[in-house]
Amino acid sequence: MEIPTEDEAVWVRRVSALVHSLGGPLGKEDVIAQQLWKRSKQLAVKHGIKQVEALDYLLRAMVSGTRGDPPPKPPWEKGSGGTNA
Image (cartoon, rainbow, N blue to C red; front, top):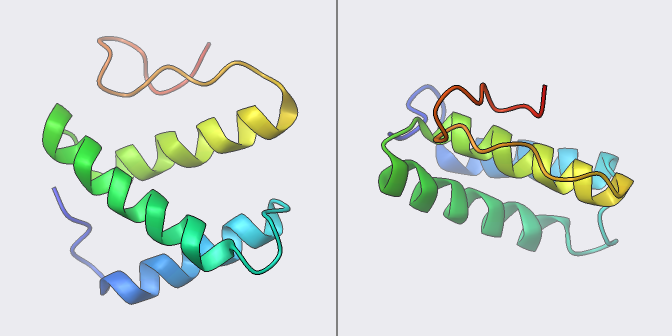
């Protein structure tokens, strides 16, 4: 369920940069990225999905929240496709 292609630190830095570009709280990007990474691992194990799917869901939920939109459907819900469409 892990993301095997690159080491964890690289992924966390990428997520941190994404959090920053989305307007995350200044100076908190790394902490938020580490929390998202940890939670994506937990969700992947719990729901039997790939970690990248869980991370994608968490990032989409974060973006939806900043826009005031409802969160996307989780990828572990049957037929959700990870979107609200």
